[in-house]
Length: 333
Figure 1 (cartoon, helix red, strand yellow):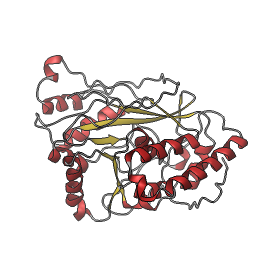
Figure 2 (tube, rainbow, N blue to C red):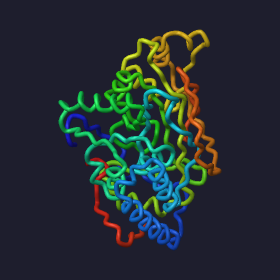
Figure 3 (cartoon, rainbow, N blue to C red):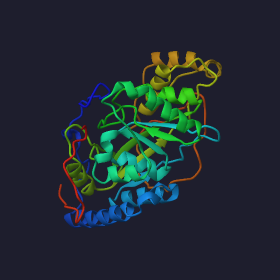
């Protein structure tokens, strides 16, 4: 624990498990070599890595090197005007690569992420904004900075759970960054990240508790048929309603977890604040166990914006990398 902003997770490295048999050792070794080469090539880009086109390409190349596919993805930014606050559940260090491969938004992360192997270097070069969670007095300034970024038209991605969990259905959303969206008049795009192996829900990519990057990477390299499903839900807007950050965070969390707000057409056109109160009283819908398996390309068409979303249900070891410095870095530092 680093300070009062830190959140503990019930998940541990024991949560991470393969859903199908591991890939052969030859495949693991080949993936490791290609991944190491792809990392070096990305890092040598230096400041040019912040270019959106190059950043998206490098993120997609890194996932491809690991044998990880993306499906169901759509752009995050909701129209013109202020940027979009992208809020996603947090399962793995792969989440960062997945978001950047869909749309190279500005990331907001805890300061310690900058020291993570591989991901930390990419995050720093990509222009990630790091926050110091050991000092709560800096919270208002962090919220102001995010509001300014959104107001300037830049979309910002955050993980409001503030730590990692092994599935999308766990972990409460912290509210501070939602205030930035309200201050900037920016839409909020809930995004659900889910992992499958050959169509089966999988926790193999989970990076939780005292897990280390090296250990997590070895599992990912050995994962057969690993797919990240990125579900960009319709954007939430609060500019016309009496919605505060607590209600907005609660609604976004419900959407990300796969809850289905049951609203009549008349209620949908009423105040968003009233809708949120009704949603909070509704029971969550059962998750859909059917998961599509084909890989699809990432489209460039943004998902539609709506005030109250219709929520689709979410999709509920060793190789040593040559010349790639890896140190055992806990998932929660």
